[in-house]
Image (cartoon, rainbow, N blue to C red):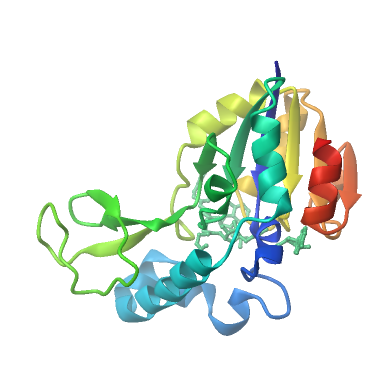
Length: 225
Ligand SMILES: CC(C)NC(=O)[C@H](Cc1c[nH]c2ccccc12)NC(=O)[C@H](CCCC/N=C(/NCCC(=O)O)S[C@H]1O[C@H](COP(=O)(O)OP(=O)(O)OC[C@H]2O[C@@H](n3cnc4c(N)ncnc43)[C@H](O)[C@@H]2O)[C@@H](O)[C@H]1O)NC(=O)OCc1ccccc1
């Protein structure tokens, strides 16, 4: 079975109505990364950060997977490919689109984490700074999200899969955030063929063996079929 590692970013969820980060109406337009997506920003104003992620949690819950998410699930279940989706997205549209083999390297909106004892539990719709951890009872609840300056999740597993892949595909990402933006180079060094599927050329487009550009709901199903 051909082993395919697929990196996804905000672009694959854009047509489901979830805002991307760097577009003209992107999330980072209204919020400084430092304020809402760093451990320092959380310590400075946990209320602001919880409100930011509560709003994104509500938006993700109201969204539905699109044809690109579903096409990747079909590829995973076609019995001819071993597919691993490595997503930078914190929404759960890959799973709701039918994908089972998904790594959320930057965390999930559906998870809560205690920054005192490390306990994890399903996130309620609304979180607030005084919410006690169900394990240690301390008011140390944060979203289970990887912020800038923090180590992404399951990196060893991702790098092992990347080096053993028969193909690396990058979908809907601008290639500005590391270590994800370095995966195409890591794959290249391991002799793994690379393909970019994106609305427009990304920052790392020149590193890919092949690139196809257009909306994910058009180019991803076309690539899968
Ligand atoms: C800004 C950048 C320069 N900074 C970094 O990269 C930093 C620092 C850094 C580390 N190494 C470096 C090397 C060089 C320079 C800097 C660094 N990285 C870190 O801090 C990382 C942690 C970064 C994670 C931060 N958390 C996120 N998310 C969770 C929060 C949240 O979501 O709120 S990052 C967040 O932003 C990124 C956004 O990028 P995209 O998803 O690509 O979205 P964007 O809007 O930019 O682009 C959308 C694309 O889609 C396309 N598109 C739009 N519509 C469609 C459409 N319809 N169809 C198809 N495509 C479409 C567009 O054309 C566009 O190209 C994603 O990763 C997303 O998860 N941690 C770390 O490095 O730890 C130590 C370490 C050491 C060794 C080994 C490992 C680690």
